[in-house]
Image 1 (cartoon, one colour):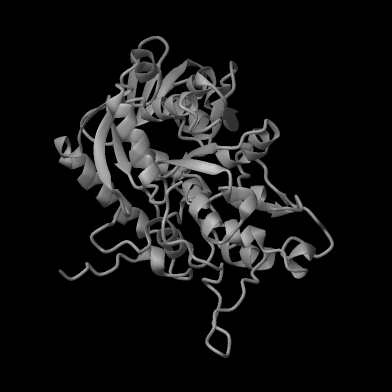
Image 2: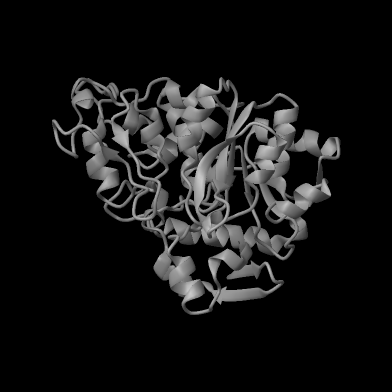
Length: 398
């Protein structure tokens, strides 16, 4: 992954020593539990779970779960014996602990974003769609993410991708779960959006067990920050094998109960009959019998997943490529290219005809909406937390 500005020591967030030198990183589960998990900052990204070298952090991937917890009983839920002995992997991998945003920005871009970059640092904004009609049809919006994964697998950039899948039958098609894609069929099996949460990072061990050396991560903004944060803080177990990071524009996800408690009870939409969902200012639902329904998003707010309430990152600012289906063209994907490797892949796909592209300026409203929603998400960051993500820095003087 072509990134610049990496910090040489994972010391950010620690107070300086008496001689002015940065203090060694000593933060462990105790600090993570107090400052992130019980405070409500935790998004359930599972970065701490997959980084733990002692396998003492648990995670329940079900509604009402999505929060890491300590498995050992000796020191209780709030402390860790391994942390007492110097293990700091969990806090190093957490993309909501202390100065995570500055560290990710420095690592990826060699600077912090400015007030003129409410959606983060980027190189290009374009509109794209998969040229393969089947990929475009089965994927979400323009089918970009599916097209990238298929292309990257075929061209040796990656040998596995962490993504999400859903169950078959009995309404389980809206219960998302982490999984690994190793080929085109796997990618297409996981295509589309569900808007219920999946901690895709939990599929990391499956990819490792299969011998994957070059892994792509597809995840919401909270998950896409794990990679640069972990790399900047030297968490080799998590960071070393991720070579491509695709982030999904995301304002929130919903508890799975929304299907029964709102869609079915109020609108008579049995989850078994729902074929496809999307969000375009309203919650859009297509059914297998050809029906189409729109539900006001304000009605859905009560089912917002708890881990989304304080998330300040709408635009997946720390991905190599950020993608989303906002704007006036429903069959195209707004594509934000942020890093060298992201640009290399997109340019090669456009050149060989794997993608069809058009200028982002063809839909200025989509770009403006992305910035607006980014600013709105930043306003969620609570005052008790480290304040940087809540702020829009002053514009750089010219």
